[in-house]
Image 1 (cartoon, helix red, strand yellow):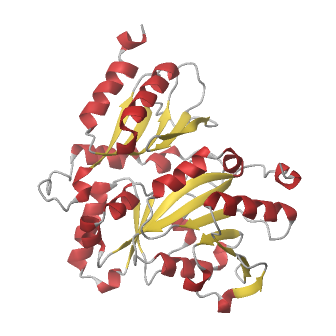
Image 2 (image 1 turned 90 degrees about the vertical axis):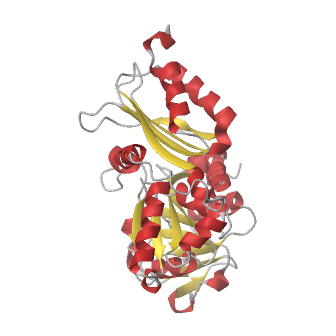
Image 3 (image 1 turned 180 degrees about the vertical axis):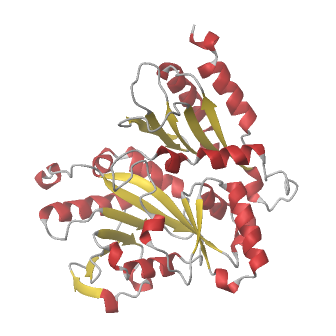
Length: 355
């Protein structure tokens, strides 16, 4: 191992993905972000420099792949595999070849399925020590978005797994069109915060720090991370029933819901259940995240998975507030809430199951 990589930062660096379908405004959004002073100490990995206007922001070019900007951002191209680019970026940081950065933003291609990228971040042990997934930001074109959701399952999945959805080009669309699209996105992913971008301009604070920890206090912000009330409302008022007969409505196959358990649960039984679920239905579990009250544990346990890949559980510092229920959010494809909830109750929460 390179001795320079032995010097780790005290905490993994938060990493956000910016995804979205072709022409949905990712490049415009990143251009605007790069020009902001409050994006200092951020490294942004993009596919091609040529798509982003940097000349007026450029301070110096460190290498063929890396430039420093006046705002304090570091802009890099993804050269080769993403893992190699992230490793190289970290090594250069440690060696002092580039300024220290406190956040990483990765832009995906317009046709990208975000799940393999998330799998990579979860599965690679060297990346796991250096970076943590903070959140997924998805751009959706307000003018063309409904048609793209109808025609391209990739765009549905990009929106379904998002923590933040940025509506772009809203000024070009009729208010009724925007309202219908927002309602559709709320049915697809009720827990995601929807932000309307004015000419691609969005404050970084609205996009980032979407993970489990409040960057100001370093404490767990479970309510913001899970937003389980939104999924609970979606379960009670399922907006997916319309359009089931429309073969172009890919999002008619998506469900979003939240399961809860009032009493502490046995970790062994939960681990067996989630492993069984993901091994048999992993490709259809687009995202799962939750907070568990595990029997014998003093603090909550955070879980997070995408498709068949499940991140190692993390113990949070403490409970916040009196609510000690286990809460698990699911976004699934071709899997209804009833079947998952029935197996969860029978295998995990049924008192007889533990005997």
